[in-house]
Image (tube, rainbow, N blue to C red):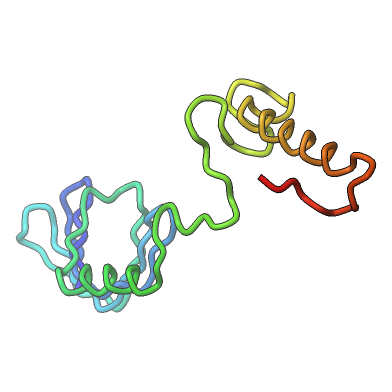
Length: 139
């Protein structure tokens, strides 16, 4: 059972059927209570627009179930970023496709430029005559 209080003071108790990104909610087997608490209505189902909601009261056991589900799936906010380079300080990987913020569509940020230069130098050293192709420097 979920309790929803609206900004106008009405409360709705029912079983949650669905909730979308805007917190629009569908409930079934609903009991609606007036803002004064003196009138009650029973409804088979109900739709509540998210922008009218003041607060939700969700039973603790449901919250615990969701927490366990998120931990078992190993993801949540931020997720696993295996193949993505994380930004490190100023000029790091930054946001989006083109490096750090504030640089427009100019290309990689300062940190990425240094990495690219190092990779190019490494490739040039690998291609010097007298060395077999594909061999890396031994340090």
